[in-house]
Image (tube, rainbow over the protein chains, first blue to last red):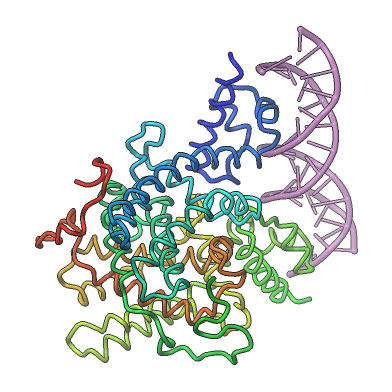
Length: 235
Length: 235
DNA sequence: GTCTATAACGGGATAGAC
DNA sequence: GTCTATCCCGTTATAGAC
């Protein structure tokens, strides 16, 4: 068996198992057993489990980011000198990951689930990889959104976008809880419909009026640290 | 040392470590070391790590649910026979977990972080516990929201609520990624402000027009919102 | 009830034959 | 490059002393 095949088989299998069971619960033994390769091959090709995780993530992030940025570029080009359309920006961001379901390799939302696992992983090494892979596209989308929503502080856009990412990750990527919780049924609905629901939801959330002041019922704490507006702020 | 003290010390320490490092990455050794109790005490008092996790979760869920439902009852009482106010319902749902930061035991958003870890955990046993603990309150809030938003299909409300929960969990509960990703700085902002941002965001999302694919017998959304490039996207 | 000691197991990593 | 065999460690769990 050629070296490349082995490497790829490991990556493919690891990707699937990581997405379904999480990184911590997936052992190298399970991966190599399913991939029908030898246990030692992982360390030979990747050096360690950590670096295998890193490889898996960066292999999927590269085309994903490219596609997202391509769509964003298109949206900005269509808008000329003005701000791009909010719908187009959101579709460029949320569309590519969700549409990967049409790729047979990523059936069952494998890619989005994997992203969810990574985002939820507490280990600093995983978080580092995520920052390395996604910081730049995230910043570009942040900039585009600021142009769409000039009345909002950059910090507010940032957090609202994070709520949206959280929504995607939690509802689609980590499908354990949602479907059964409320007795709606066992099956996750068609991802295309979820995408539409999500974009509608996030768009409305982004277009909400700026946040100011504190929600009733919460008594503020002596301001030793954080203060409301601006503060540490944005560049 | 009394039996109760030991048990409680284990619960307190486990809670903190689980919240910070996740369930899988926290060993019983780490817990007993920090709690200054014997390793075997965990198995003596709880039987297994799984049941310790269950205990930790149910200990925090009980008062949390009680408070949430109390606030919901109040909101419904204030509304008389009409539907409760949407703001009040959302504040009843999101407020209690976030406000736990004023409890010194849950400083640093420990409670919400723990909820996040649990929701993101792939293990069926953990998901079972979550369903057991949170199904009933979740259904009650779902019913209240349906009364606030009678034009939305129950399924749509359900998913939008999940997006909101995802937003909370991902942005507040799992703080590894957000603050640093976009160069906004290292510190998580004041949770009171986050709560308000979140409520504003979720409220707007809930009040968005129905999604096109929804089963509610309603008018389709304005088509200006639905253009998702990429063809495959929506049906 | 609590702790010491250890069992029983599975994990990741590695040396060395081929 | 690949595989076999093995190492060493940390894990949960348990048996038995106190």
